[in-house]
Image (tube, rainbow, N blue to C red; front, side, top):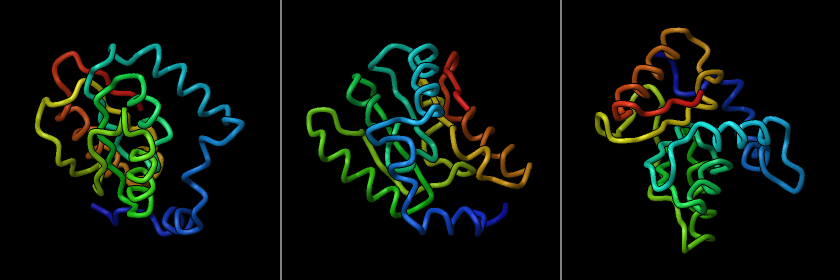
Length: 150
């Protein structure tokens, strides 16, 4: 297993630009298309969703507002702190959990979630074996019939 984040990706995150990349007043095409796909393929709320590499919660927070039981995990401490702060700003529909963690070694139990969002890790993990490990972990934590969105 290689380092948690490739140095160039860590440098990008250190600049602090990622938390607002998919949100803001004018969503990106990526964000708009992803929201359409989430609406189409996620099971109905209150399904349990694990957002792996969820950064500051661009997708996790709206899903929590829609009634999903959302857990967010990200390897970058500043993202986890920002997601927790933003979650606290929606006290009626907070994220169920926000944790520092790694796509290749998820702490979730086997067959414990209805859906896994693996939207960033597959292009952030530059080694093919690391991507395979992340996919293996995603399938491990999915319940039978669960959905992986990657």
